[in-house]
View 1 (cartoon, rainbow, N blue to C red):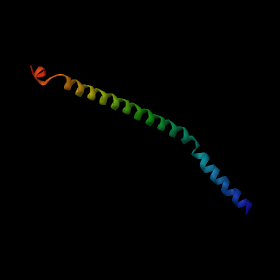
View 2 (view 1 turned 90 degrees about the vertical axis):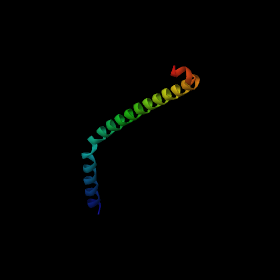
View 3 (view 1 turned 30 degrees about the vertical axis):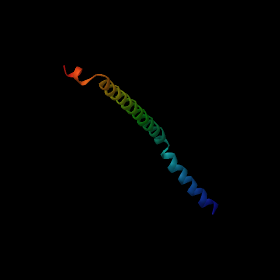
View 4 (view 1 turned 180 degrees about the horizontal axis):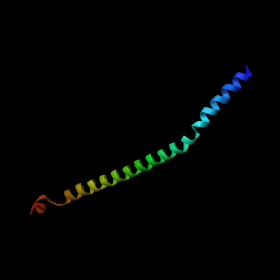
Length: 68
């Protein structure tokens, strides 16, 4: 029974060993996705702040003064 168990354990270790190089690729991909998401979040927040500023400025300036 011990020989069968060790044989299966060796096969499983060999299978996981084949996938080891993929770990670095996965981490790079996750890092890229995280960077992209953070940049998109920052751009969205900046656009939202700009929109809020414009809306606030429109409240301060009367409509008659803008149309002239």
